Image (cartoon, rainbow, N blue to C red; front, top):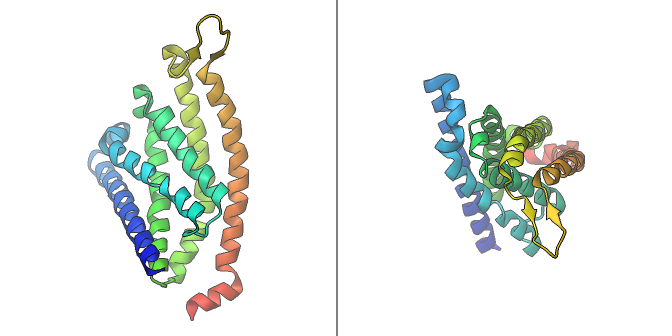
Length: 222
């Protein structure tokens, strides 16, 4: 309906504004302060980044109620990956926040999202600009695996701090003999992260074929 389409347009616009601000801020800071800006990335734009990622949880709801026709599982995996890395790994360990890998992650995430939300906004209005369509469904194929590697590296960097501080590790008192050592949980999640990457990449190739097939390209041009 018109109302739902307008709501989705406003949602995409809000996300576009947030990610564009982050992306522009990162570029300007790097051009102004050089490498010194990299270690301060999280403290400068972390709040807006967290707000954008929390807002992205609505995309799962959009799919569940049927106003977004995207596939649920790939989108769910992509969103939860970011939530876990941003809030559980980076936000909880101040020592990790100053690492260069945080800047790399934020750059990759925002580059992909600026393109994606620009494409989505135009699509809500029935506008399909062929170069943007190609960029939206092609850029993610090389950049998503890079972001997964950066996520894995962020987890590896954080492990010594989780081991030292015992963050999220739980040892239940007597009579229970059950305990959770969180570094082991993160190591197991690394396996899930890379297994999920294979599934998502296959889905990205499938989406690219659907939207950039010969017949669809001709229709978009017309």
